[in-house]
Length: 83
Image (cartoon, rainbow, N blue to C red; front, side):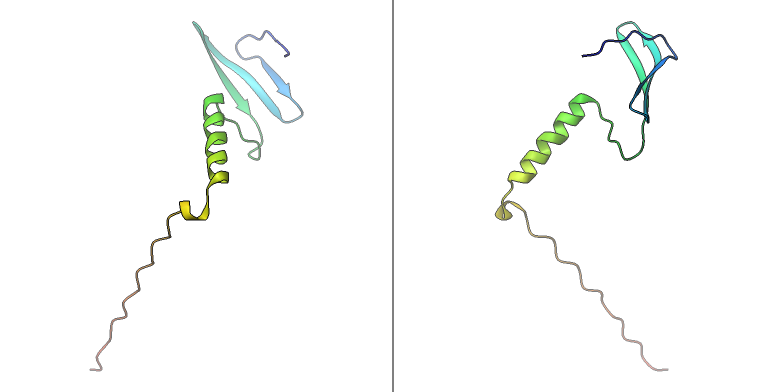
């Protein structure tokens, strides 16, 4: 693990296109800003782990576990009378 010391408004680069900026330090909390391409997913660790668990559950699902899609209501056609 690489350990770095940064002050507010200082940043680190990850590769060529991801920048992590220290925005604020308040007690034991540190606010970070992350600049990354939209193609890179950025999540808090607990959210990332929840996504991974959900993906595992979805991969293990059997066809009978998936409820059938609701039927689309038929569009009613109104009949116009000739005037």
